[in-house]
Length: 102
Image (cartoon, rainbow, N blue to C red; front, side):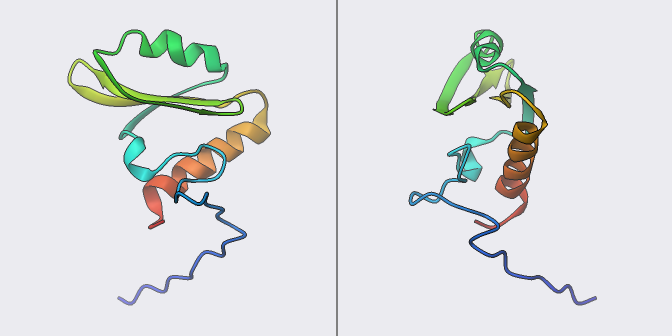
């Protein structure tokens, strides 16, 4: 079976100069396989306070990310901010981080 792939336009997938995804400012290695989404950025700190170890804290606008470990599992907590538009941005950028070769 031949799989056809189409290159993603730089206008459809915007990257920052450091190669991170535009809104979240994350690189693929910054995201764990397990992700907890919360609305309010303040909830990220409340959830990650239970982590055994924190390896990354990054924020941009209303998007706050914390990746660490809890009981031996690597977990990312990420805020979406308010509204469906923001949730759409977060889910699309997370999808690109884990499913697209940036």
